[in-house]
Amino acid sequence: MMPQLRVYVPPHPLIKHWLAVARDAATPSVLFRSAMTELGRWLTYEAAREWLPTLETTVQSPLDSCPATLINPEIPVAVVPILRAGLGLLEGAQTLLPLASIYHLGLVRDEETLEPACYLNKLPEKFDPQTRVLITDPMLATGGSIMAAMAELTQRGIDPSLTRIVCVVAAPPALQKLNATYPGLIVYTATIDETVNSKGYIVPGLGDAGDRTFGT
Ligand code: PRP
Ligand code: URA
Image 1 (cartoon, rainbow, N blue to C red):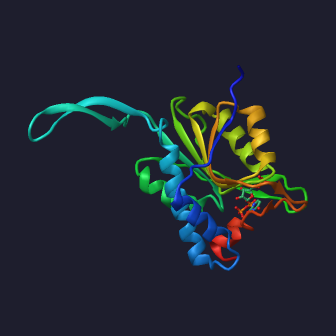
Image 2: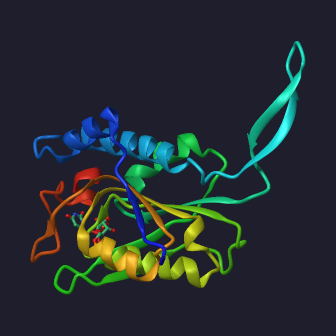
Image 3: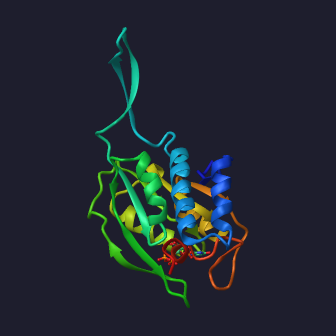
């Protein structure tokens, strides 16, 4: 059987709560940022399962030696926030992955064509092929931005099956594009919404995530 893109919507009350806060049009920017931080934290916690590299060892407790599992420091872990809105999820992700390298990627959609343009690329020329990558971007709408990000990463040696996407609202067009090209990939999202409107906004969605995060 062909592998399929896996999309997880963790049924967790904290994720549901902060999604509701983020969706609410009356939520001010300062609280919207808190919602993004919390969603980044809890979705990263879920995504870290079977993704963070571990090693088996033994530790000496005050009473006896016992088997133990530690995070493997030899395998690189990277977080790639898609600017601007992906920065909102970064703080929560970083609290759980304090040793991860952060590679910023700035993408902005043209308001007419909805095509993404890259204005900042801090990715290295080549990644260690074992690198675990977590991409943060709250909105997967038409899929143009996440497909551009995945292309930049895979060109530099990243294995899609070692990659996780943490987002808040995912829409079918983006998920279909990811599934067609990167079937081994796994997405963690707070919700899958029904549609993208003619202006490229997810409905019901939460509006413009970048503008709401930064109050612009
Ligand atoms: C938003 C969002 C995604 C993109 C999703 O960024 O953060 O990166 O749109 O849309 P797509 O799936 O149709 O490509 P935007 O271009 O608005 O930039 P911003 O984060 O700076 O606001
Ligand atoms: N980007 C956003 O910020 N919101 C959407 O609904 C779609 C793309």
